[in-house]
Image (cartoon, rainbow over all chains, first blue to last red; front, side, top):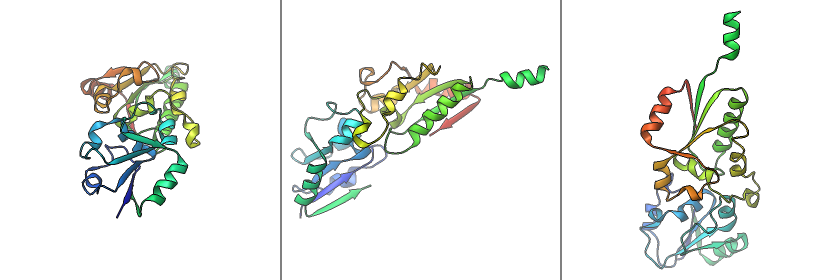
Amino acid sequence: MSCLHTINKTSLLHDMDTCISILTPDDAILFIEDGVYCCIDDNSIKGAVPGFKFYAQLEDLQARGLVGKIRSDIKSVNYDEFVQLCCAHKKVVSWF
Amino acid sequence: MGDKLRAKTNKKHFTFLTRRAPYGSGNAQLCLDMVLACSIYDQDVSYVFLEDGVFQLLNDQQADSISNKTLGKALETLELYGVEKVYVSAKSMTQRGLTPDDLILPVEQISTEVLSQLINQSNCVFNL
């Protein structure tokens, strides 16, 4: 069952280990709001196996000055693509 | 006369510790407002960015994309308001993989020892 996980806190406020440890190959993580700061920090997603899909909310990256500063394996998505991601997965789990 | 004059010119050293990222909560903006208010009343102000607060200093912020005011732009005006003692925690920068090139203004990096001294020397410390 595919699942979209959304993370909206910085990595230090938010322990991501639980979320990452339960990912299945069909799952994806979307970083939104302050969660996008996780995308510049290799340590916060070190537990993830390469091949998992990571996304970051483009508008939140722009607001925080993070465009061009994030890991290359994280795709940025706009609000329309955010909605498409939600529809493409069976469930959405918010790690707020 | 002496006492009254002293009361009017009484200058205290305020240290502000700002520890949150700029837009996820109101803490960063509130701290900036307090810093500016203190500075306008001619107080001795130190402004320290630590933990996630260092993210406030990132260059190229465009908060209009999330219908917000860009905090980084406001921080650029600190010198105009007479806030000259602006520091950033070197440890917090390193933990987040940031370098001075990523920041919107030149800020002195300080160690935790220096931060500890700064807090000890202050009359009043705000932490948010």
